[in-house]
Length: 249
Ligand code: UTP
Image (cartoon, rainbow, N blue to C red; front, side, top):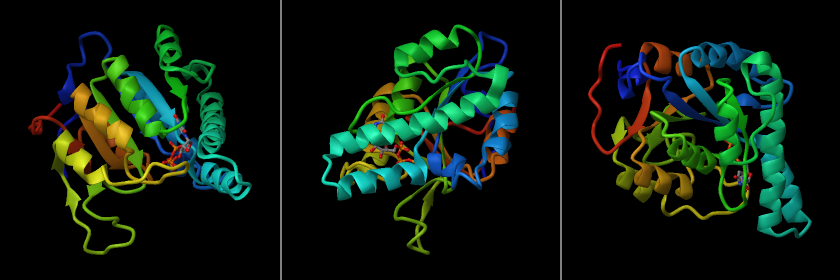
């Protein structure tokens, strides 16, 4: 467990630091009935008091169900992606509404729009934007475009493993990876609609070129995200060009 504040990536008293979070649809909406929206809203609101927050919401199981049906109907992958994007935006719309006055009241449909919305100093929320990628890539590029201090991927596992920890009990978790090592790990995965890996290849490439540190952590309990950003405690994987030394707040 690291005890370094993400504040270590920047100081609090300069202009508000920016944080981009890729919030998996399967985290926010494991199902419509048992969603985590109410659990995430107070945490996101609290973080947004100190940071300019951008949240990119994924499609989760609902997107995968729609994509499967599209595929069964013989619909091409690009169109299936478009359907997936609509579901991510639906989930994002739910979060925008649940955040009330603390979020900009519209889902951004491009990075440029997200930057524009951020001028209002509220949490900016978006989903997917273009076929051939996942919301992790959207978030990685957004982090690059807004010069975020850190990019956080909130997922259903507590970091990046050498094999799938849900299938392999001997899977080894990495505390630290270089962007190049990350690319090697995710590089062999085929890109199809509804892909479900810890990070897509486009996102991994952008992480490498931007040099913005990526933290992958378990978001099944939103307290993990809160603790990582506000207290500096997290269990997960950091991907960075240099091994960032734990720093107290
Ligand atoms: P997600 O980003 O949700 O993919 O987008 P995911 O890996 O299933 O993530 P979780 O489960 O939410 O964590 C769902 C699908 O929408 C399409 C892709 O087909 C993706 O698999 N999509 C999403 C795009 O084509 N472009 C985008 O910008 C975003």
